Length: 204
Image (cartoon, rainbow, N blue to C red; front, top):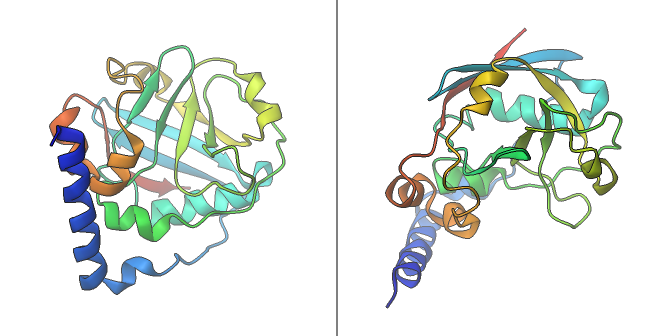
C-alpha cells in the first residue's frame, strides 16, 4: 500500500470515529450579520497582517468571514496554496472535524470590485453558490477572476509585505482532499515548512 492510500485509509477511519463521537460536527454554523466595516488581525507565523472588510462589497462573504473569525476557525490553519505572482490560499481548519462543520456553502455575491493586488476573496469551485471557508489574497492584479465570479470583500491594509513572504516552495503540492480528511496531521508531516495563522481576531 502506498503512502497516499495508507493516509486515505486512516482518514476514513478517523472520519468515522469523529462522526460517532461528536454529533455537533454535523451541525451547520450559525450566521451572523457583520458590521458595515470591520478589520481582521491575522497573527501569522511570518508576522501580523490586517485586512479591512466592507460588507457592501460582498455581504454574504463578509458575514461568513465575520462568523468564522469570531468562532476562531482560522487559528492554526495553514497557507496551503501559495502561488507567487498569483495568490495565496487558506481556509481549511487545523482540525478536519471543524472544517466539516463549517463546509456549508453560502450564496454568491455579485462582483463589485476587481481582484486587484492585496484584495481578499472567497475561493470556490466552478459550481455556483459553492463558497464556504476557503479564501485567498491576490498577489497580482487578477482582473480575469472578476468574470469568474470571485467577489472581493476587502483588502490588506497592513502587512502585505508579510503576505509576500509566505512560504511558497510547495506551491500547489498539498492535496486538498487529504487536508480535508486529516487537517494539520497531514500538513505538518508532509509539508512542515508551510506558514500558518496563529490567531485571527476581529478589530473594529
